[in-house]
Every structure is written in structure tokens, then in C-alpha cells.
Image 1 (spheres, rainbow, N blue to C red):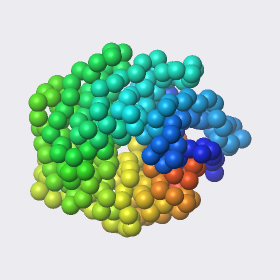
Image 2: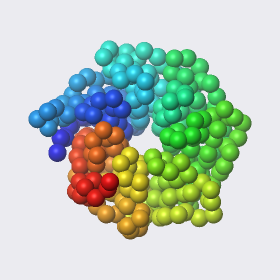
Image 3: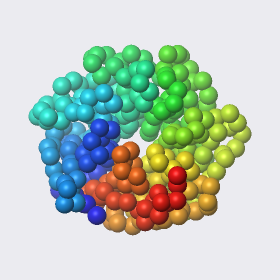
Length: 321
């Protein structure tokens, strides 16, 4: 299993390149994000199965999330504790090509639009707002207000242009139309706890999942939000990040504060089909590789980045058409 140590840096977010199956980025912070700077690592899986550093970029505050551009294979955007977004060209890693400065507090989530009709970035912040950006412009295009507590995550729909979801410490999930920033189109009490993560199904435009500090993962059908259509149980502490598989309609992965990475199949069981314990601290970052079926990357506060294929997904990929 390829593994990389980010020395004296704690991993917060990891993402595979949408263009290169062997390239990934990891956003990290010093001192558990409480003080010190941040480092963006560009990593590559070599033909012999090693995970090696290609380049690093430094920022004076902790980096909490990263996303690749969907149009330029060398561009990535990071979010930091000083409220700034950085646009990097990873071939010139010394300084960001653009900095976007409007948020008043930590930015904890950044996402690049998934539909080809638009190339826009979302940022979710502890200042209770979500902002919409054109990464080539210095000022935001819109600000979305409605959450009463910090916003942990905002994610574009991969199916419907201009549609995104946000989740917050106020326990709600909200759906928005980016063309109508005045108010959310839908609001839902998703957990009796803080909601830390959300993920859209790659196969069903009406299916969205949330992960909470109550250790639960819930699936929601946007056509009927009266109750969740599935609830996955087993995480002992907060679910930090969840993601639907790009290759299997009913499979999700999660990482949590109980040091675990878990694989779920909501059509098979409400419990995890596999629990991976290869971290010794909070696991924060998670991503599926769109190019390699079943392959996952995760990262955590133990400074380790792992790229691996869980046993359950190696077997599952053989069963799915």
C-alpha cells in the first residue's frame, strides 16, 4: 500500500487528480491547525507502487481543504485558517497565482463545479457563509447566508448546474441555486448534531448523504425529505468526511474521529462492510480515484497519506457490471 509521511504536518484533505490517475494533492497544517503554517503536497504513485513527493507549496496559515481544477490539470485551490482561498499552479509552487480574501474566519471546504456548463468554486466558512467564486476574479460573485452556525462543507451537484448543498454546525443541510443567492431553496434538519460533511450520489441526482458529529451517515431523497432513506451506524465518534463511490451506486466511504476509514453499502447493511484501521489519529481526508476502480486515498492527523484498495471494493468491483 503506497504511504507517504507529511513530516510535522497534519493531513486535512486529499484529492486525486481528475486528469492523472497517479497524481494527488494533500492539504496539511502544523500543530493540528491551531497555529503555524500549512503545506500543500503534490504526490504521485510511481510505477513501482511508491508514493513520492512531486512538489510542495507553503502558506503561513493552516490549509484545511483542497480541490483540483476541472479544466486545468496543473491548477488546485486550497482553503486556509486565515479565511483566504489560494489558487495554485502546481508547476510553479512557490506562490499562489491568485488569493481570494473575503471570508472573516476559517475556510473549511472548497469545491469546483462538476458540470461542464460552468467553472465556479464554492467556499464554506466558519463565518457562517458560503461564497461563490470565479477563480480568475479577485472578488466573489455571490454570498449565501442562512446557516446560523459555521458551515463545514458545501458541495456542487454533479448532475444539476447551479445546484449545491451545504451543511453546518446548526444541524441542517441546505440546498441552493447559485443563480439565486437570496435564500436556500430547501432546508432540512439532517442530524441532531453538527453536520460535518455531505456527498452527492454520482448515479442519482436526487440522492444526497450527510455525515454528522453523532457518528451517523444518512441518505436523503430530495423528492421526499420526511425521513432518511438509509442510516448507516457504527462510527464511534464524529464522521469527518463521506463520499459516494464513482463506480458503485450504493457504496460510500467515510473517515471519522475514531481513527477509522469505513466502506458502506447501504443496499446490503446499515453497518460497515469493511472497517480499516491504519491511522493512529483522527482521519480527516478522503477521496475515491475516478480512474482506478475501488482505489481510495485518506489522510489524517498522524501525518500519513495512504493510497489503497479496500478488500471489500476489490471484491465488489468484480461483481458489478
